[in-house]
Structures are given as structure tokens and as C-alpha cells.
Length: 224
Image: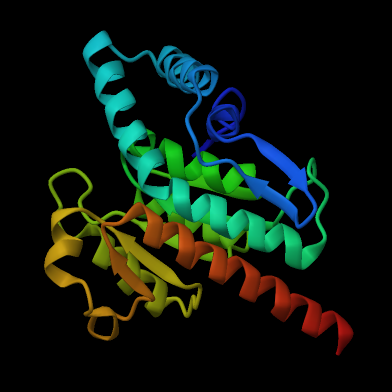
């Protein structure tokens, strides 16, 4: 199990600066020269901790930059909206929630993972179905994100979904995969999942909806 801490948690915070104005809190979705340096330093630090080769580090930088770019506008809009609606102070976490992310290559998801954690959402990384099911037995989660291929098994994500249903686990599932999602987007009912996508910004939006819905339900139970 991998739980990303600093310096990884700081990665998105180095890209986007949090400011307060008359309308509330908003995120600047612009990469300043200083922010770009911080972004690169964050990836380099992560690569060093993981013991990646120079070639693997370069690939990690590329993937993380692409993912960060894809979610930037969504982050700016959603974070500002959340802060204004909740009256959150500039330095406080905007949301509380927990994601279980199942992917044998968790470094592929650095940008999104840190974007969530910058909002106060905990991201627990599992690399196998077995590990994920153990995590689900030990803690509660608001949403599960899973890749499709793990090792030589190109339908491992579906096997996880089947295992969840067989155990009566009703946590919303997002299948976040490249080629497979491109071929199967829109078949959520068939595969009994909440969302199938290969778009980071879609993952970001759906997760925020799930976390907010879970908090509203929790408040309702407490008030009831």
C-alpha cells in the first residue's frame, strides 16, 4: 500500500497558488516560472524516493505534466466553488474524504492524487486486487478508482468489480483506463460501475461529486 506524503502532496500546491479575494477562495490555474520549477522539483523528489532511472524519471515527468494540464481548469473552477459554498478559509482543507486507487503503477497518477490531497482528500494506493480488498475490509472509502490491466491480465479491473459485488461492497467505482476505456465508455450499466473514462478531468469531477455526496449523507445521518 502506498500513501503519498510530502514532497508528493506538495506537487500540485507548487503548481497552483491558493488566493483569497472578495468572492472567496480560488486557484490560479497558471504555471508561473516559479511554479514550473517547483513542479519539476516535486517529480524529481518522487523519482528519487522511488529509485527511478533517468529514463523512467523523464517519462514520469511527461505523464505527470500531461495529467496536471488536463485537470488544471477543472481544479480552478471546482476548488473555488467548493470554497465559496462552504466558507472555507484559504489555508484549510476544502474537503474530507477517502479514495482507494487500484493501479499497479501508482506513479502514473501523481498529478491527480496530489490534486485530491491538496483538497484534503486522502488517497490510498493499492497495486493488486487482493490488497485493495484488504484495504476495504479495514477502512471505509467514498470512491474506488481502478485501472484495467495489471500484469498480464488485461481485465483485472473487471475482476475487482466482480469481487466487490460478490462481497456486497457498494462503493462507487470509476474505471480509469486508456485504450479499454476509450472502447467501452458509456457501458457503465453493463459493467456495473459508476464511470468509465480515460480523461483525468472526468475522474477529478466524478470523485469530487462522490466525496461531496458522501459528506452530505453523513451529515444527514448525524442530524437524523
